[in-house]
Image 1 (cartoon, rainbow, N blue to C red):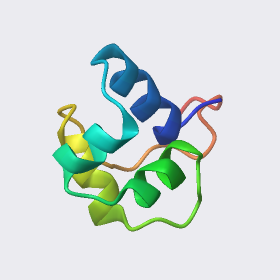
Image 2: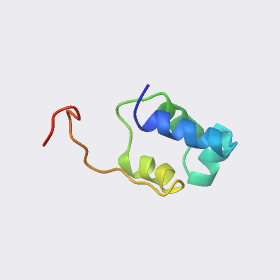
Image 3: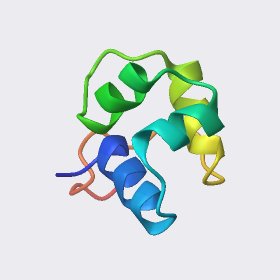
Amino acid sequence: MDGIGNYIKIKRAELNLTQEKLALKAGVGLRFLRELEQGKSTLRMDKVNQVLQLFGQELGPVPINRNVPE
C-alpha cells in the first residue's frame, strides 16, 4: 500500500496517536481521516493538507509514472 493514506497511518503510529486524536489535532473530522487513511480518491485537498501540515508536509505535483526518467 502506497500513497498519502499509508504515510498518514505510519506517521500517526510513530507518534502513538489514535485516529480520533489526530483528527482533533488536525481540525478534521474522524470520518475524513478514516477515509484518507483508507485511500479514498476524492477528498478535499485543503483538508488533506491540514493533516499533512502536522508532519511538516503538503500536497504537491509528482510524476504520474515514477519509473520513467525525466
